[in-house]
Amino acid sequence: MTESDTPSWGIDPVPERLRVLGVLDGLLLWTNLSVSLLVIVAGAFLVLPPEQFGLGLSLPVALGAIVAAAIVGNLLLGLGGLIGADARVPTMVLMRAPLGRRGSYLPTALNIAQCLGWSVFELIIIATGASALSQQLFGFGGVPFWKILFGAIATGLAFLGPVGFVRKYVRKFAIWVVVVSLVYLSWWSLHGQHTVALWHRPGAHAFWPGFDLVLASIISWTPLVADYTRFSRSRAAGFWSAGLGYFIPTVPLFALGAVIALSRHISDAPGLLTAVAAGGAASVLALLALTVDESDEAFANVYSGAVSLQNLAPRVPQRVLVAGVAAVATVGALVIDLRNYQPFLYLLGSFFVPLFAVLLADWLLAGRHYEPEHVFRAPELRVEMVAAWLAGFCLYQWLYPQGPSWWTDLVAHADPHALPWGGASIPSFATAFGLAAIARVLARRPILASA
Picture 1 (cartoon, rainbow, N blue to C red):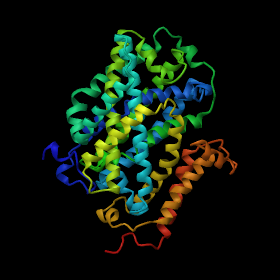
Picture 2: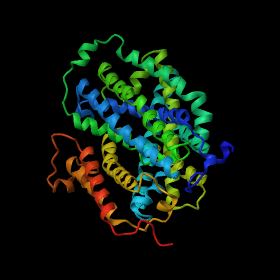
Picture 3: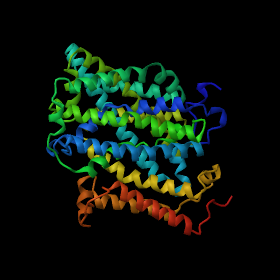
Picture 4: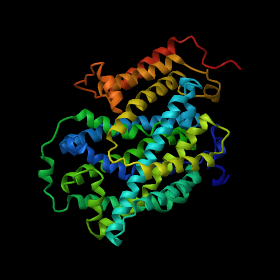
């Protein structure tokens, strides 16, 4: 077996000879995917005041929300990785089992949209960081140039596929340089600051909105996780690589964004990168490493966007889809100015938190194992399971309306009310999981379609 066998593997179950990612490989992959400038910027959103699109949390409340959401979110991500390693198919193909073949098309379309959205955000944040560096060093910003360049780099990495990406990129460069950069930035963010004053700086006590924001950032990976853990050597490798690998950097990165925003008096979240670039030679080098490393998140979203499209068009070559997704994302980054993605995170949470609950309930009641027949011979549509998912989505939106103004105005007619505990994510997950479990037990519809 060579690595060239894996990059364009389609939607069929991955054979044993291609299941080559061990726990260490998976840990490196998911740790590297977790290290993101977007995560640092999201940490800033937690403490920035509402007029700057933030939640205005105090630092202790923000850290509490980060830790709690990181534990819950990465447990779910690890379970998603385990299910992917068990079934050995991409996540959107996996969704055929609980929702039916045609029932999987709606989450597939939503996942393609989120992959494109994240790709656009990634290219914008990479270009912002690269522009801040080049402006500081050479007096040249060139944001469009950086968007096109890193769009091309993301395309090349996506052509490698998960195995080639880990072994040719992550092992040799990414994670080791990034660790040093993050250690330095952590020191820089607190150097010369009164840490006690930062800790006691007043702020909002809105724990649950902070929890939902962090959880949404993590849960947005559950529709992608099996795209990578299908190459894991075992179910345990899939669980620990995704759950633990993504968890390790999550808390320090969110915390770093919050601390930088407070200690350096950032006026808006994207301005965080400009502040780092102006922090001296070592800060410039650290930001350079993180900016280059950010291309792996763009890789993941381009690759998974293409793999998700294969659930709709399995006969189209994956490389063609990769090139198409990358091209659309690059054009989107050039023509769209998306500086505030906090509402986008909440909207993703409302879709994908209850979706994963339905998948988990169905998988558990299927005996904690999916055979290929459960996926490829599923009925056309499982109405009851789709209804469970949509019920969870509606509850999330009723508790915490998110989306375009026309949608939130419509939800307002339902007189939405936030709960004093649990935020929106936990009630939404519990509702979808419970309804899916009841539907799975009571449904008289056959688990497999007729041959």
